[in-house]
Image 1 (tube, rainbow, N blue to C red):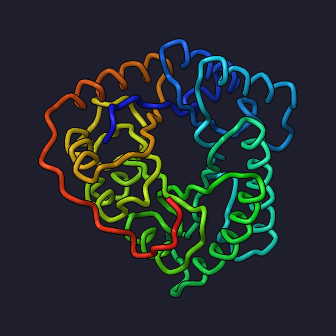
Image 2 (tube, one colour):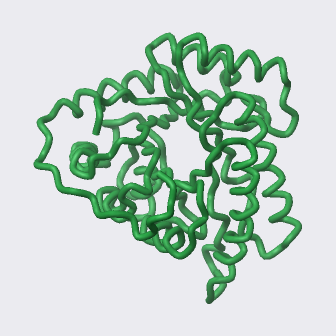
Image 3 (tube, rainbow, N blue to C red):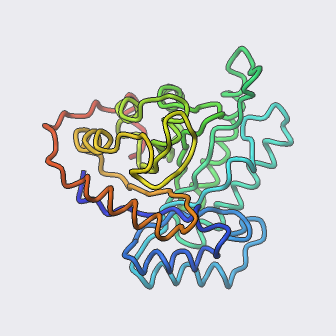
Length: 289
């Protein structure tokens, strides 16, 4: 893993300021990689204002930064719905988010894998098949805009864990598809983030860090919960992880929560690394890095 310079997600700022102001505040404390939450009024993907998008892109450029990805709230879509109209609406929303992402120079669009009912999911793979069809449409839309797709592990989704994500992506060469692995999301479903990172290997291109009490789904400041960050950083070194590291922190004062978390993760990162172990090659040799 290269020298750690964590990026920031603007999720924690959605109720306090718009995306451009959040980027400016984060840039002032040295952040240069940004992930944007596409939700109104912070950054509305449905009715984007060209002037505000231009201001946002200029703010990123002014600090020499880059937009890694644009996200949508996981509650706003369902790419695995049994209703074709719902899937179509979800693809349309994500396609609009791609337009916004392209306008601000984002590298990726982050998506979830569609919802699986917690009480009575289908007893077969039909939801995965529906999601697969939606993903094909979004990959084509991303390629047309010079972007890529990130699938995030999120509780309650069709592909909520590392093993299901790895299996799904190894079955077909979707192209332009990478993984955003969120350690707090993993811990929320009882998955060991270290094991998840080892399972996904170099499929992971963005790593989300935040903390949570054991058994809870939260994005708290690092050091305030039960997630083993020394083990996560050791694993990243051992796997020679070279992707982005983004702090997605929610707190009453989002900037202070980010700075506190960054200080703690940087302090941990100076620990002498363990002996490296080579990472296994991808199962699919045609998948793009």
